[in-house]
Length: 293
Image (cartoon, rainbow, N blue to C red; front, side, top):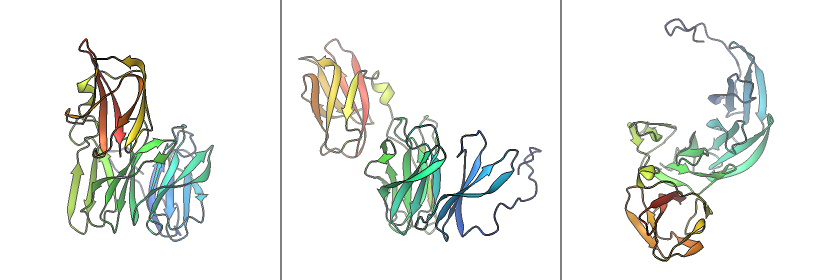
């Protein structure tokens, strides 16, 4: 424990002496009492458990949150469904999947697989597209893949977006604003290739600089794959211009639309973040961000 005296630490405090090949330990206020608890994955005994913080760094005995889960590897606590409490996302390399366990008042239920990833090992949660929902960055120990899975809402993830497919044995990843643009980037490493890599997040670059936000717009589904329905509060005029704009500000596609509702065709566009931009006859421009996978 950090004693607060110039970064000095006190003696080790053993919380478990038979941790069941505990692989990951993550901090998080799992019970919502304002104290940081400790969540542990037990690879050998197929459990996820928590040591509740009783205050001033005193932890209680292990409480089983999840039992009989097939070899949990990495874990990540986070509010996946935006209901105000911490859920748990876990990876299983044996099941090639990422799953989540929903926290409902301190009781955890299996939310099912939310993503498929061969030899899933590393997990990190962050809002990568700025929509207010935690997304999942997953890494593979055998497929050399570093993937981003966007949160559609309520903890459901979209089809993965490949960040890098040339790494080998990626065990972990993290996010931080590495270039000071206010957007989280991705940091990862490949120990077997001796690589330390960072990837600039371009999902939100320049969006606010292009145009003011477009109010009264509904894009469904979002994210979407090929086509999405668009509903506007203000109708499209006869001479208004409707465009799909990529992260660099380039027009990717012009759309023929009129009235308050139309179908947006995104087929053939590369996965990523775009803007639906409307240029009115008086010269005003408004835009609404969306994600295509």
